[in-house]
Image (cartoon, rainbow, N blue to C red; front, side, top):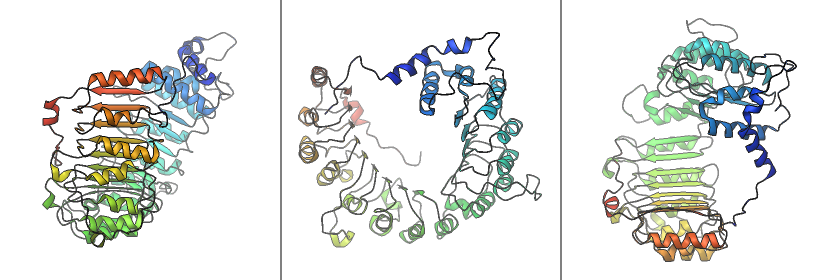
Length: 510
């Protein structure tokens, strides 16, 4: 049901976390001649007052202080540099006003936090000089985020020397990083082009993000050839690997042959990209996330659902595929998705041009009952255009999935009260926690009443610009929730014909 709200009853742990966060100045200001000043001491023997706290509790306190006190977290975070702290996130500092403070924090963390595995440093004043000070101190790093800094090739060379266990590197909008940096990271050649023993040892990298750097196809190929564990590289495209500005046939196959362990693929359909090109993706070792972004006009797309998408769903849908997004695609067959993707966790259907109910022969849909999907999140955005609407039977099939936890639907007129009633009869929405309906003209009070039931897990309902829902309905549901002590939040925006007329028809090229 909407869960019963327990008033004035908070766990002891939560109470203690709040108390510490609210009174952090007590420990910050506490000084005496018999105590070591934890703000300036770099003595390894110092024992923090929070040293014995479990790591999850420590992180909760830090997060709460950061949320409440904002920028002043720099002065407080030094209190929590305990031996078992494994992640440190310095606040973004674009003016350089906190650089001395951050230097002190990094220095103390390198002495006290011997388990440090994740570090984030953001801000233009932080370049190779700061990284040369920080990186050698954290040889056990597995995750590093240096986006929006002035870090350059020397920084990547330092990582290649000191951080052999690095698995994830995020270096977006770092304009001083070039192909030479990739050589120092994973090849063994310094920024001057000389072979140097002891660098280039980052061989375990699985995730890279280097948008808006000066890495070219040369650096990309160096990385791909020398990073055997690489699964995802944000910025790399088939065009880049082929050293062209436009897609040419076979470029995708080249990219896949160089990156066989990639798990996330985002296809932006362009002219000359065909179904046969997509067959190259079948050689991937495992595909977890698949996105297709179509064209402004449906006749510009040469990829078809049956010839291009369906083979991929058959290959990965019952094993590794967890996330699927199709937007502005010429034609989509939901029955095929349901049939071949039982392990899918998230499905996003956005502004596709047509939804097919083709014959089983055409789509090769098995006539037997489909396996029960494990779908937990469903996002739908359609249109007032009748040709773009999802068929009612497909909506019912998706809403009937018992594991679903979150549903978000925009401009979906085929969602009706009857669909909610039929789905509720099947599984009572026992796992549904969040429902968002926006500009769904067919939904009325009768449909939402179905969710006001003690058998579901609903926590949040958002109803925006639905023509048949009024403020009086919202008041009635809120009164019902209050009288039953339900932990239920209802968000509402009144229907506006002007909002509906400004239909969500985003130009894909923008």
